[in-house]
Image (cartoon, rainbow, N blue to C red; front, side, top):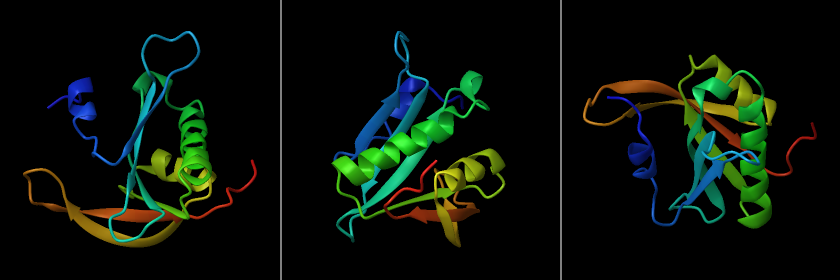
Length: 133
């Protein structure tokens, strides 16, 4: 099933923050992500559904976008930790997250959607302050 704007916008959680990256003068966003509170720990946010438009990938936009998301999380939302999971074989995404300072903490297994098939994921975390670039 193709990824549509309606499907992406349906991911939003009620207490979460949806963030879009729209360059000056652009009509449509080129990036989408969510920062969601973790239920068991105040100040711990989950970075999820980070997407950069396929035509914009490979130019460093993802790194800039993730850095902006983290600045918002730490400065505006008073987060003390941000976590995410990523497929370990998604090398460009893993590299992007590590460039901004995320560190791997463990491997996990998750089943997504109706498939019930557990897939190996890598958990990454970061705490403030952000490393200087």
